[in-house]
Amino acid sequence: MPEPITAPAIELDGVSKAFGANKVLDDVSLTVRHGSIMVMLGPSGTGKSVLLRCLVGLLRPDAGRVLVYGEDVAALDESRPRDRARLFALRRRFGMLFQDGALFDDMDVGDNVAFPMRMHTDLSEAQIRAKVADKLRRVGLSGVERKAPSELSGGMRKRVAFARAIALEPDIVLCDEPSSGLDPVMSATLDELILELHRTLGMTFIVISHDTAEAKKIADTIGLLASGKLVTYGPAADVFAEGQPALRQFFERSTEGPIRVL
Amino acid sequence: MSQRRGPLEATLAFLDFFAAVLRCLVTGPHFWLETLRTMDILMRRCLIPVGLAVAPVGAVIALQGVGVFRMFGVEGLLSSMLATAIFRQYSPALASVMVAAQAGSSIAARIGTMKVRGQIDALAVMSVDPLRYVVVPGFIACLIIAPLLNVLTTALGLVSGWFFAVVLARVDHGAFVDNLYSQVTVTDLWIGLAKCTLFGGAIGLIAGFAGLRTVGGAAGVGRAANSTVVTTIIMILVIDYFISLLLLWLGV
Ligand SMILES: Nc1ncnc2c1ncn2[C@@H]1O[C@H](COP(=O)(O)OP(=O)(O)O)[C@@H](O)[C@H]1O
Ligand SMILES: [Mg+2]
Image (cartoon, rainbow over all chains, first blue to last red; front, side, top):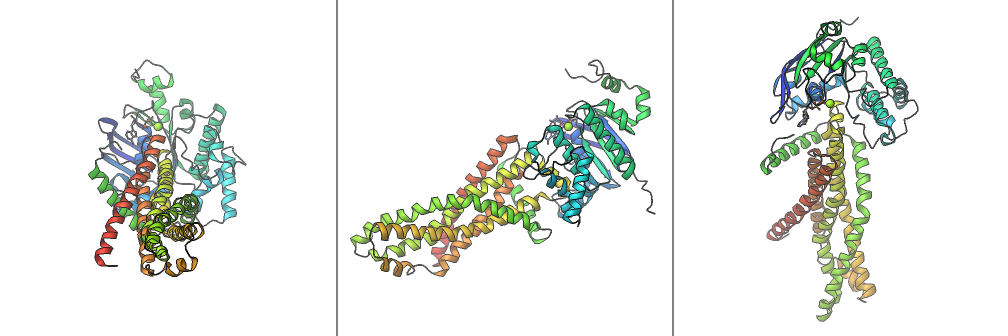
């Protein structure tokens, strides 16, 4: 029996990131337990996507540490060959659903979902095809293998991208707004799928969302990012009970509160 | 990135990029299938334009030469001038320029599109190095198709020159063929092929570099493709000049 993993999947320690004068993340620290579901809420433009990109080393924070199972991604410099190899190895632990899907236009849906398996496994073509069909069925898209991404709606592309993200059943799945652009029923289906994968395979999920109902349904841990600061972070039950003003504003869809748009 | 991008920064970044591509070439993994696919696409894109561009050149050389050579009564030597011009200069330069225009722009546009649509990032997150998966195949493909096309342009240039001289201007066929190789040597062919390989590689490299640095949506993709074509064509013509000088100086 393998030893249970007790180290946190992700640990951010004082992470800051600015683009020129635009301070996007300001001293963010948090821990994501292995095998938990963390939902990060926040208005758009506050750095949620930037945060995810820091986790996989697509962006390097200006300050702070980004530990993935104890290894600091932020210390890896892509321009140094050894670090680059290490970074690509570390990314094997992740699957990522990008905000706009980022499917490959010159491949059909089946090849898109098969891509990570073709790259990183020795599975036969028949095995890969079976797995692709299974993943597509799970996201409610059976039989679309031969379609081009451009023939699909935005919501369908997102689900294909989700199927691709979970294709290798990675330790950590990062989902950038999986529910935006989906109808409520499809969105609920995707939530069920996240819960199922979490339950059966013990995957860790980090989900960015605008949807408070989704957060209530799936989150073990909830965070609220506003203007680059982590306003609230903690176990879902506590966060909901606490009634933090910014979070309450978010849940009540109110223009009144600490989050200022205008 | 929003950092300032001066010419110095671009040059340093290009040298870094070049070094990284070389590292990818000497160490695995290699994506040979992707390389073949890229070669196939680029070859299809280049064949017809290259043919159309080089055919008139042979005819023009013959057209201009035939009058002068006739004046001195040595029109049989027309073919040796034609062969020298085509083997040494026109064919390699034209093949390279067409590879820059067709293959360079297509590589830069493809990689640029992938970049602005987040697909390059998606590759990286799936632990597939974009340098290995999209840049190196384009580089190798250009390196190979440029000399291949040079063989084709050389043949086409000679055929079109022959057609103009023999069929239209009534130069003697026997004299044309006899004198064809009197001035050119196998070395000329090798020099032409070597130049094309050099230019082809540079095109693939510059196109990949411009593609990966694309920012700013569809307009940015257009800029990347355009700057690739302009940069590489100027580079080809300038370097070609210096190579000719050098060879002349060496007496090759
Ligand atoms: N690569 C980048 N270069 C410059 N600015 C960026 C970059 N990526 C994101 N930003 C800026 O960072 C801020 C946060 O962006 P993002 O993380 O995408 O927001 P969201 O919370 O909606 O996902 C925005 O102001 C955006 O303009
Ligand atoms: Mg975002």
